Image 1 (cartoon, helix red, strand yellow):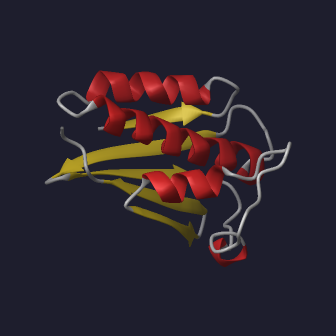
Image 2: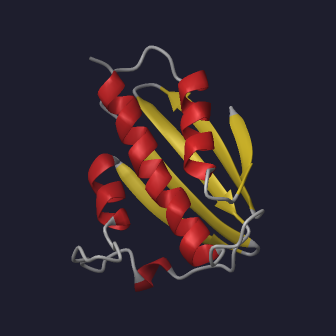
Length: 130
C-alpha cells in the first residue's frame, strides 16, 4: 500500500486517515504508536527538509510482513546527513526537539538514508498484536 501526500499543515491528519483505512487487526496501542512516530517523521521532513514549504511530495509505502510493519518514506528534499542529528541527545524545550527521541522509542528500527534526489526514512514497528 502506498500514498503520496503533499506537505501542508494537515499532512499528519491525512497520514492518520491512511493508517486507519489500511491497518485492521492490529492492537490500538500499536496503531497509535505508528501514527505518533510517523507523524513526527513527517513533521521533521516538512520543517527541516522542506523548510515548511507547502505542496512538496512525500511518498509513503506501508508493508506488513510477518510480525512487523515497515513504513518507507521518500522525500525530495536536499539529501541530509543523518549522522549530524540521529545520535545527538535532545533536551525538551519550548521549541520542541523531541521528535527523534519519540520516534526511536516507538519503533523497532529508525533509519534515514540520503539518496541522490532526496531521503529515504524507514520506520519498522513490531509488537503489533494483543
